[in-house]
Length: 512
Image 1 (cartoon, helix red, strand yellow):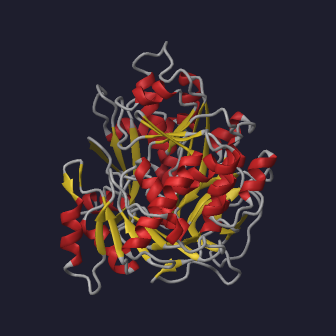
Image 2 (cartoon, rainbow, N blue to C red; image 1 turned 180 degrees about the vertical axis):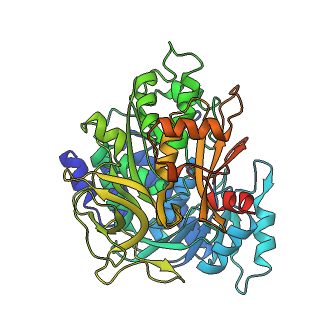
């Protein structure tokens, strides 16, 4: 990280970070969306006016404000206006509906709720009003899509000076049936974004992109990186391929990504015309949030001619490890990268005791980027203050982390532990497999049986279980790990944030 970015990363609050960047490069672009550009100077000025408008509505330091808004310039302005006031904000993914939104409003006790009105054919205002009828203290609902509250900044109190107070409530991504409110501070989110910026080796000449919902915890993670280095990002209100390619090409995006599913979508478009770069200016795909099969890494580098660096993060810790452009090919393909300075990774056995390098165990974390706990849920920390992740993996002597699954993704068949990820990585190499999820299903004689759920690429011949198991045996998979059930689906169920596969839905569907 260069000296300027390092100094900015020491900021205690988001607003302090904004003011420092606006003073350094006020005329440089910050956000680009269609024909609109917002500079860093305009970010500070307009966010402060929106803050004054919100203050006029009754938002004060500590007021809980929920917002369910798409990825737009206005959404970023509203979020940073709330940081100027020192409110507690709880972003909600815009694709969520009554169950998830009602849960977030009820658990957070939100006093205000910002919605986009009718967006993509769905009336969010009507949903908000409907949900409010069942809340003991219904929030004040206001629309914040094209027009934002406005006011005179002279009415505002001083900006918050404490970066360690809880000011953010994020919701776990929905890959399990019970979301949890994750508590973050300005400092924990700034620490995560600083780590991401440091790992990717970006510069002021880059042009980034935000194709995932800004309401995801990756939103502030990414904007911290923009504020540290002073380069812009192109916003995509709704990401779909191939429609989004015009925006990437028009604005000369150099860095793209989001998660494994995004890499696959870019690769699919590249394969339609292998001789022509799908985005000529693109030099790096980067992301995290879901496992990355090694074969996908090799295919992206080989066929797209760009680098791919993948990392490990979660709502509780938005940036844990990240592959670096100067890592070896093997490290980039086979690991999740290394943790930044200040992030402690401990691999433990089932009793919580540390295990040696190279030995699988549960991943536990401690550092400034780690959340402060959960809202209305049991503490996720052990006695020494390490976050218990539920992920399984090991650390190499080089410091690189290898994830081998989740505790819930370990299939126990006749007393033997089987990693779903190991099988999924092998399936990713099969030409008849577009994507795959491996799950354990209840079985009277075995305890659990191994089930492979496969999404095939267009035009592929239907895969059979004998073909699948013969392929896996040829790849060296142990016989006791072979799937005993194969299900072909048109599309794997995914959440709307980083397109993670919803395995609990597959277990419910095929576990009968």
